[in-house]
Amino acid sequence: MYVWHCTADGQYSMYAETLQEENYLRGVQIAGEDGTVTFTSIYPGCYSGRWPHIHVEVYPDEASITSTDNLLATSQVALPQAVSEGVYATTGYDGSAQNLAAITLDSDNVFGDDGGELQLADAEGDVTAGYTVTLPVAIDPTTTPQAGAVPEGGGGGAPSDGGGAPPQGGTPPSGGPGGTPPSDGGGTPPAGAPTQAASTAAGDLVGSR
Image 1: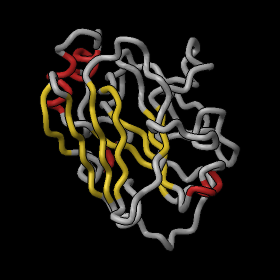
Image 2: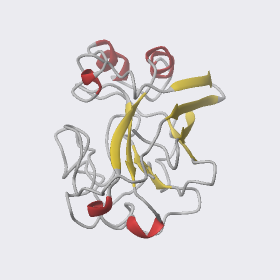
Image 3: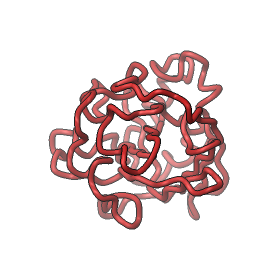
């Protein structure tokens, strides 16, 4: 599984104009026998026009993650409103509270299909200790990989929200899933990154929708 999300101020490494040479807040994990993967990161900010979310791509095995031709599934994890509001009241999330207040799960261009029913994560914790965000989902291992089979706003090139998947059918940029993942599952986040959040996804094989 390859996951990525924006910074506290809503910018994506590798896509934002000033972050094209950076690859933080991105990571790859291989599911264990119990079908779970775990990532530890900061809490994403909320930028204009999108509900707070984490991008997800699922590949059939470790050897397949070098190309989006091999995608089994791609989706996004929606973060809970109450948790997001609490995080955005802390230092470092300028503008996120206002952006969140201006959108709903139903009006979001990805989660609006079902109001986030299948993509809305559970969260436990607090803004001081951090949150554990969990989303149990199922993956059909017989799915035929389809290059660039991504939902609108979910990836394929550099979409208008600045944080999609690598270009359709191509090799992911250096630092994406095609590279060797660091031992902690991602690059080094920006200095002073606020509120830690652990994210766990569980499924039949690996987590995503």
